[in-house]
Picture 1: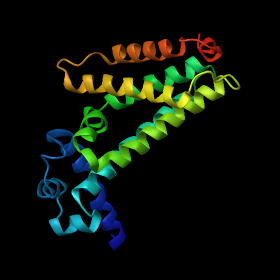
Picture 2: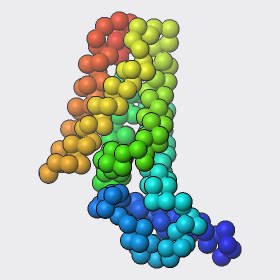
Picture 3: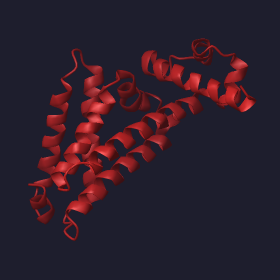
Picture 4: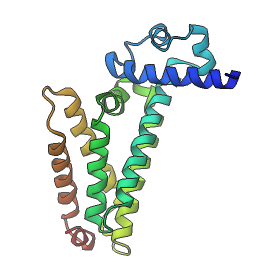
Length: 203
């Protein structure tokens, strides 16, 4: 391999190791030495790939968000063009995709909070990305009829889903995924049924 290929390979091995270790035992409990041992690289090579453990955590989190966002966007784009169908498709795909791998769920909804300021900027960007997806879907289904603040509405839906997934991660046994979806969809429909022409379009 060329020098660039070796660097890319080491970077991917570190991301793979961090994906497992930052999920369990967690970001704060995982040292650079353990990451390097798991990735089978030297400590010196670590700093050729990432400037710090925090930098690696950010890369892993952003990878999770990128993959999840792509899956959710595809589900919405292929759903029937009504507001209800599009948002429900997005909610269902988000929950199913995240819960396919408990490591992804832990990283995106538990360790992101435990990491504190390390991921505050990345988390804000992620929330903004998913908010835009919901806003775009809602505008497309109810063009010219926006009686509610769609941005705040989208934030409310995202907050509800986040708490449901934290519950899924933290409780034993975890609630069934389909129950999470049904609950999130119910919350979404209740929000949109609060009144106005946009609510009527969601019926």
